[in-house]
Length: 255
Image (cartoon, rainbow, N blue to C red; front, side):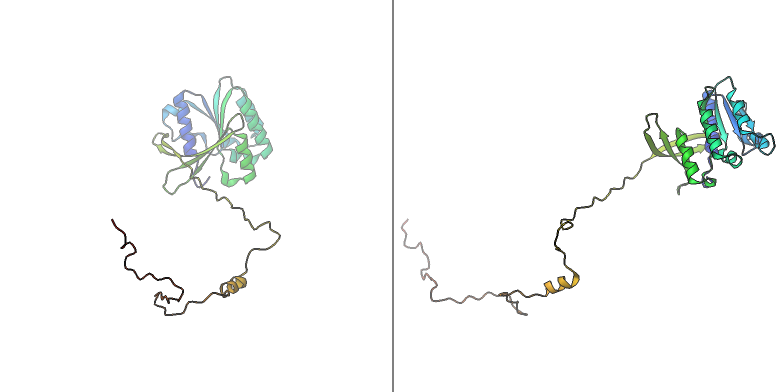
């Protein structure tokens, strides 16, 4: 995307493949091969073959299927990078490009197909179809901390999909360091409590007026407290009350 360009990550991948000893071919449409290889050291340039789609796309000889035939006839296995699918889709129908990618991914000589896509240029439906075609989709986004954040969606053969986010640092020489998995914050979902009065045939709820009338109701035989009371308890003895005048009820006992 324009927010976080993916070409720096692509250059890191190429450097990693060269270090691993893989044969690499780049089908380049966004830049001239000279400009594409310019940032790399000579040790990488000598091991990367760049096919010039940049010049050919503006000529009448441009043909998507001729590129497919050239790539399919390779004898040695190689990793293919396409820079970028966005430019191809400006000249070709989406369905044709989709079928071409499927064919390339099934060729025995092609070990891996990596394609750059500028999501800002395409519709959401096209981007989602390309994601479903890929085994692994990497999306770069900018963060407030300044570190690139990579959202990884990986589809396993059994159909299971895993998602994670990783932060990393791009060092000089196109090497990736400080790869850190970003833990997803789990938001606790509030469980809706069942309403016991929801399915009743009669209404137990009070309106505001009914609640106010209830609070102002004085029940019978309930004396309202008089204001300004001191809180003292007064007891008036009646004639029937039993009163013992002895000081000590146990005084007549012998011990």
